[in-house]
Image (cartoon, rainbow, N blue to C red; front, side, top):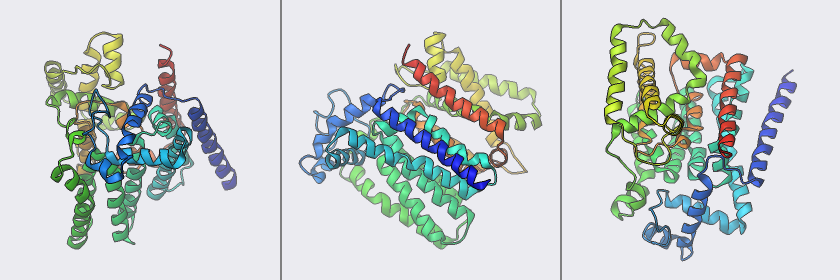
Length: 420
């Protein structure tokens, strides 16, 4: 029986791998953005032709990179792109190599689930397969995207964090790799550095003073190059031009709507929680206040992005009522679910995680690709909420069908969108 299950698992993942290879040959990009980013990145590669050091010191200062805008991408990622092209001497081969690097994401995700939950529940073996239905993962793997590449190292950081949480064995080694891979992820995608706060908080409750000091010093050491490069040398146009937009209400409303959108296939956990929750009249007032705050402060003049609910609200209904309502419900439900006491305690770890997911789009441009497949990785690996953990442990055929249907429909809609 075990042999049959293993063969079934291998067959499923091999077929999904072949679908990704087919996507490479068909130049798949159902997200309408990765090809343009790829072509834009290719324009920057010449900056390293006169040497790597020269490229780093002059990054963002060459107007021939882009006559329209500063590229908000790490110079280390552009170097990676440059080396791929040089080593392969072929655009197709460079994309093929990158695609195979990106296969590490579902593989390490599989390892994370095994490390945290084990595989007594056979459906957990197939959870990483949902990654292959993410149009953002597929396009990013095919078109050499920095966000997807950085996720390889971020999920590795999560893997070693789980090992620290599970066992005292080799704890300093596991902390080292957790910090190392988070640092590498941050060098490719700087915004991931904020998750050091999450790891620090959880280690603070687990480690002694010596080990916490080790963690802090290791972080400072590995971030010193970036600090020197950005803040001392002042090569920061690519880094700070997109930070901290003023309208935080819009950022919170849109980012929360996208976060909640990805919680839809897990609605079972909210149904279970709110079936036990005693609604009060003041809850209606809270919801109304949230709606009014968004209504009077919402301002999003960017002609792209915003998330799927915002796009539907704007393009199909030609008004913002849908996004105002959905965002209000999203904030209310997530706030009540994560900020309420469960078993006489509030999970500050999960609250911090939700806040960081909102902050990750602090530049004010809300992209679906930031959260997909990112939220799935977090949901099945590091959330500690009792309802979430019980859901994952006991995920059954119905739950898996709902989840796989959700990701499949979203992928099919991204394909259908190309014909509109």
